[in-house]
Length: 259
Ligand code: ADP
Image (tube, helix red, strand yellow):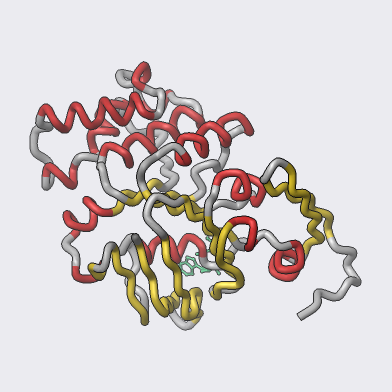
């Protein structure tokens, strides 16, 4: 379980997160949504200790992140972010093995259990056949699955991902999110696409200019009036077979957004 209380963060003088509370319950998939610049990536980075908040705290299973050593933290939380890496000469197997660094405690030779964990992670994402390929040769979808495999090889209880569907076509978007849904880990995922959030997240936190504008189950948060206010776009919602589907229409320029 990850719990954030009263998180406030600023880059210089500009406050980007303002008194944010968040609870990620064990085994759930929690989506962070919100317009561009609302603070999603910054919040994710505060959750995994990559950024230190100005005020407030983050705890993982009751232990403050600020009190954990990097190795301890890496055993609790793995992070999947977009990486350029096009010029890298690592093989897929080597990249996934890097996920074991937390357990190895630095650059020492991989042990059999590390090789086994890396292999199991590649099997889990359906990418074992790519193991010997150079990562610079992979398609976007393959690459994304391999980055998730690296996160899984770390065997942390919590997996945090920033926009894992970026640059993927529709089939791979669904493939990556289906994969995440099937994990035993607790997942926090930043998503732009609200229909993907609707389909794959149990819970959502909606950010608006650094504040929490909505939190709860996916169905509770994806309320058209709330989304209209935050995103400044018209939203129709269809509930079909227990799933939420959203349709968007731009507001006419002269329309007022109710406060
Ligand atoms: P989101 O992920 O929702 O798009 P971000 O957390 O990336 O939002 O950014 C929130 C705000 O912080 C934006 O206004 C952005 O311009 C600003 N910001 C992000 N990173 C930095 C940085 N390294 N230095 C200064 N401002 C930043």
